[in-house]
Length: 111
Image (cartoon, rainbow, N blue to C red):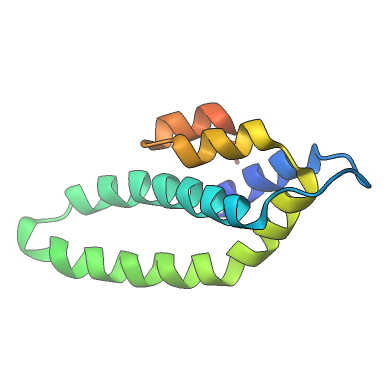
């Protein structure tokens, strides 16, 4: 999630201060979709590696972890997105159906 946050911060930093603000609802939708796709891409890989009888429990744990991380960080990212007012990137992030598609909109920074 840290990589997703870093990436989104870079994306929103491209906005020009003092310009028209972006759509808060679209920004929230974009941030949530991007983070969800990225998180579950990695979580599903991890879940697939454990024995079948342990997958449901791990999936529940990952869901709780994701929910907490999302709620603790989403508002800051949405605020930055609004300031950036990058409609093309926001629309791309909303339309993405896979993590790979989302990364084409705003590449994940490598740590």
